[in-house]
Length: 295
Image (cartoon, rainbow, N blue to C red; front, side):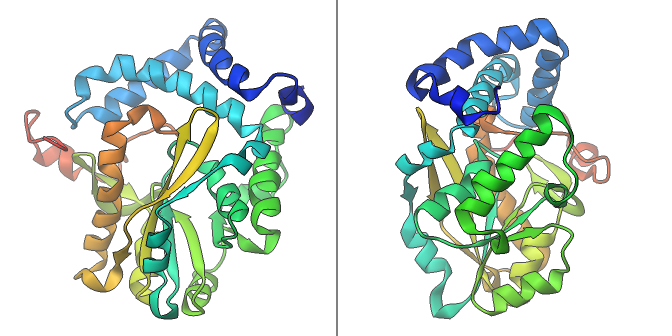
């Protein structure tokens, strides 16, 4: 029932969103107390080397409420008709001379809405998505959620041909960029590339930076913002791969773009944060009182 659009049309969003933020977290806490503990552990870890390390408990509570709001909005794709795109001039700057563009995004503040907002405003990027959306979906609400994400925020928004599984050959993405197309891909997925981020070094995927560096494309960071029941998309100032001396420095610049956004609003992080066990440069080289991000 919760996965039915009809269910969510029974109560206006302006009433439903604050209601679920107030009711759902304590109900979920009673059903599964571990959720609270996991959220607090995530925030302690996320903020450890930032000026907000002592706020982890309060931020964790806000994170759970924000997650409830976004979960409710996720099932109301028709609300994207009210969305706005801020910073369109940065899209133009990222596509000069007919060049392709690597649009990077993080799993922050309802990143699932990005294709839907872009499609609503006439943009048609190619989005790299998890390959599990093309496989047999699990039963129950999880499977319904995956199908809803693929259909409502992917196929209907951009067209199925604009969705690319993340196990597709890299040559396919390179060809698109060399044709002047836009390829959207997340920067914050696990990988093996050492990347300075939030006061430590973590192992992230090298894909976005590698694509831009190889094709000499510009990188356009984007982020979603929630304003009440409206989801907006903000396009940030693009990075030019030609301005960086090597792949590592470009990868670090992409991550640095998102650092201050996360420190300002850590509750908007969507997925569990775990420092990679593959890279521990920051943890082994910094003393506990080393300078923190934003300090």
